[in-house]
Length: 64
Image (cartoon, rainbow, N blue to C red; front, side, top):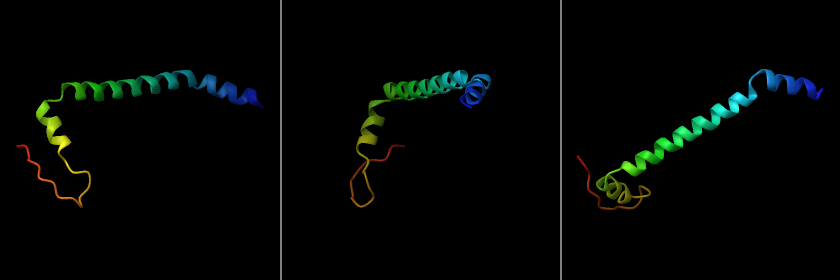
């Protein structure tokens, strides 16, 4: 019975699907890291000054 599942996984490209999922995750992670490294200091300060929830009033400047 287990041979049936083994044949289905091997014949349907189970190894290929795993590699594609890994590389897709790696590409997305790399893209996010590059954007974080290239962010301007002004953007970082703006994001850092944003309030965490809507109940508190925090003065922050809006960027054009």
